[in-house]
Length: 296
Image (tube, rainbow, N blue to C red):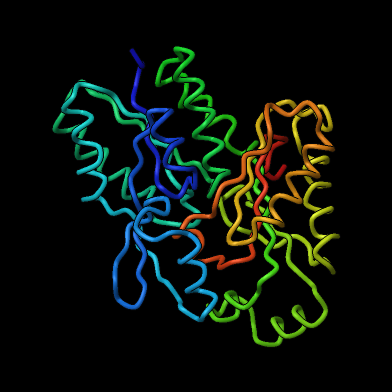
């Protein structure tokens, strides 16, 4: 019997089959296209290909966080079943969902004395957040207690690295995230941002790099610099991509060549519809365990 129920949000950007196989319930964010609401349900309501094609044609989706009422409805059946919950939340640096989960937790613990609901802020996103969920599932399956698993993640969550790049800046321009001038110069000169997640869970530009191949090499170089044990890294590595599978596969091949002791092949997932509403197509993100993101 599993010692607790591990839960997360759909923005962990892992395949539906993965969550089913690992027995991890997830709660869905929502997004809107032209006034119509859709669940961020891992490509079930709208295939990822259709989602990114609509953005490519100029559509601008908006997103909705998981509110307290939705968390109440998600958590309560688990507690009624007599089980405790460890919920790993999407980064508080990107969404108010963590705060919603805390409010739901407090209300439910008053209703169900003796039960436990622990909410951990991942300070992560997309399949980086998913790599954290994967680690907690391994800890759960090894028989670690809820308290021990939560404490492990609180201690190590800033060791999960997120490196992102985008070669399609049009969505950033449409959304007002970069100026028309920056878009024009970047597009003309093939200058792309390389970003990572800081210690507060915010996506932060780090480098501006000329050319996609150099960009990919620099991303893998950052893994070499920061991965646990460097080139001897022997843990899992995930990548997520938004309608640019060939670019993701190219990065994965570079990683697998550079890090021969990887725990399995690099897993490539799709950037989901909520995270993808903010990145648009053309994004590749690389995730691995390494040194701390915390500033000294």
